[in-house]
Length: 295
Length: 318
Image 1: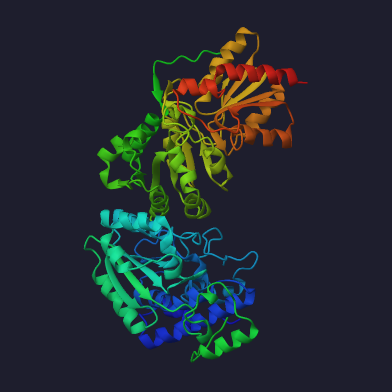
Image 2: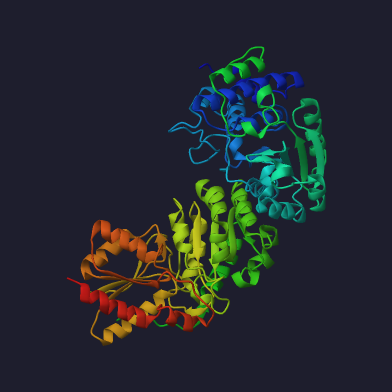
């Protein structure tokens, strides 16, 4: 297990180029499949699909400090509401320098700070609230955004939700609240991969036209490709340009569950299943990094 | 039996409102949230004088708990206000994950607890809230007995780091505790020294215990009466010292037997000092519509019920 100092140091360095982001994303995807394989549990599908977003945020967009303070005053904050994709969160935090990359090997094991779902209870740097029971993260992010306003802190709060998660009623309570209270220092993302545990979202619950729904709730809404760094980064920059206009910003992000590993892509079957030895090898062969530094 | 003079009766929720308003003046980090019940929670003064630190959430309690958790990130001390029913059961998972497990410094302030909510009936008369809240690891659970004590508790929890459930109610009750009292979280208050039975009461049942103490004194029974305003952490030392002296115990609360103060004291005694115990509490039942006094009588939560419990437990004393 070697600590990758080159990647760890990148978090606080200058924003990364698209080419650099792609390399980091491949390394993060390697971490994800290895983490879930090691404990034969966890959620690779959504983690792989959202890798590009978290890498873009932590290695290019956000102003953040890996020495970590809970209050994060003067920093951009990120909240993961769909906590089951903890592998990507842990990998990105570790590769940003929040904790040793070697600690990824403890994921889901006894006495680890890397719980199955993200938690503050074990004081893992980078985590500000527990998540996993779905539908709660948007409310928390809005509260944190309002605290920033009270503190005269002009940084931004980011939050990611799964699309299946939008079936939770609390999300719509929060969606109604944020524009009413002019929470315009908030950018929310929905991972629109169209899949949930029991099958396609449109077969399970019919999420329908999410742009129309959020616009009807008075959000500013953008749509993008969550697995194309050029488009994704441009959309995040556009979202940032829309802040401060009295409305929260929603970015609906088309992604593919399992992105980067061909046999995991586009199916709900890899939502919460780990690869076996053979599948891991195939996956790692597809996730090429120039200077791979697996933990 | 000591005398407990008072000049007026007031509702405990108004003690909360007064405490919150004072905190608005003294602690700039205190913020308040309410789910469409400003008047019921007596938050009007805070809303009027500190509008920038007040958040009207509407009828969306789940969102309110999440917002409160988020507001702590940045150093705020959020006080949420709604009925006890909607402060607990309705949002148990939000409190569990976003507040308790996440160790957030949120003060969950809950009015209209128990039967004394009255005519609205069982949909609103929660009698399980203390149980739900005390089961959450590290959650502090407080149920003060009158206006002055509720105000003092409201001030005290702002200074305490960690999640708190503060429970109070709707009816006016004698305001007999000192206005200048120090509220010490986790410390019982000895109201009357006695030798024949220990009565541990919380919330509205504290005054009923005082009334019962007078009736018992007429019968020659010298009751020790202790106000357990903090149900968790329980003042185990005071409970055990009193129980070891009197050798029999009665608990009294406006809550289900399951999960309430009596249940906590029974666990403590079973482990440390097995002694006869009777519980004055609601016995596995929902409430119903009626006036507070009618309900407290029907469900056995008044001074007569406490006297009966004392006589029963004394007959079991060895």
